[in-house]
Each structure stands twice: as structure tokens, then as C-alpha cells.
Image (cartoon, rainbow, N blue to C red; front, top):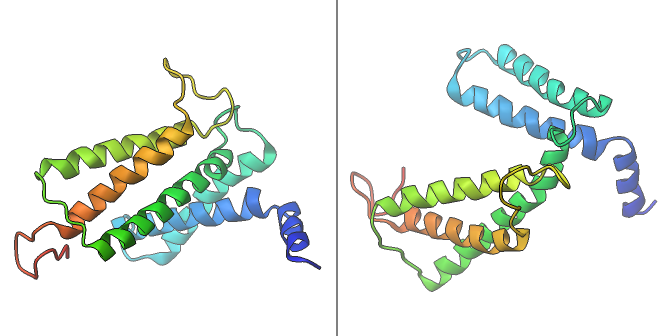
Length: 177
């Protein structure tokens, strides 16, 4: 059996449509609930709530009861490759910037504006990941190639500025913790 055949068999068993989205949604919810301590340190409640919410997202997808353009699993499967590509580009740029000693010294409002712009681009990516004809805005969706060039540059600039800025308190210069 080749690797390609094994991957096709996993796809036929529902790996992409059921298992991977369930794991992603469960993990994000579980970690989020653990960080906010909504139910204290009780792991069982956190686990059951994350399981129920993840199942509540996956089951309508499997039963095909989501209305068109609102299938969360389809949106995740469409947007995730773009988000991962942006993450890889960020890490690559950070490595190159570290090698050449790139430093950003700018006003403190730069980070705030950059975060707002990045949030807008990520929101745009998810809104346009619903499928063909699902974006019902007053303007047409921008070509994704435009987003692939601008967003990583902005993210890189924010991360490099945040890491290399001068410290304001205790700790060594540039220490963010």
C-alpha cells in the first residue's frame, strides 16, 4: 500500500471532513476554556463542554444541515491552508530578519494600527472562505494573491517591532515577559 492510497483511505473514512476539524475545534475550545478559568480548575467540565461544542459544529456538517455558505467545517478547510501559509511566511521572515539584524524603531501607535490591519486581513480571509458566491459585500472580494503579499509583510513588521523594541521595565532590553 502506498502513502497516497493510505491518505485516500483516511479521506474516505472522514479524516478531513470529521476528525481533523473536530480535533482543531476541540483543542481551541479546551485551551480557551483552560485559559479563562470559566469553571475553575475542573478539567471534566472543560472537557465535556469542549466535546459538546465541537460535536455541535461537526454533526450538522456531516448531516449537511448547514445553510449554504455557513458550513463551519468547509470554512475551516478553505481558510486553514492560507493561515498556515501566512504562519510559515512569518517564521521565514523572522529567521531572515534575525540573520541580518533587522530592527524596527517606531512610534508606539504602530503596533496598535498594525494589529488592527492584521485582524482585518484575517477576518477578510475567513469571510471569503465560504465558497464561490458566498461573499455578499458591497465590494467584490479582493484577489487572494494581493492578500498573500500584504498580510505577511504587515505581520512580519509587527512581530519584529514587538520583539526588538526597547523594554520599559525590569528585565533585559527587549524582554517581552
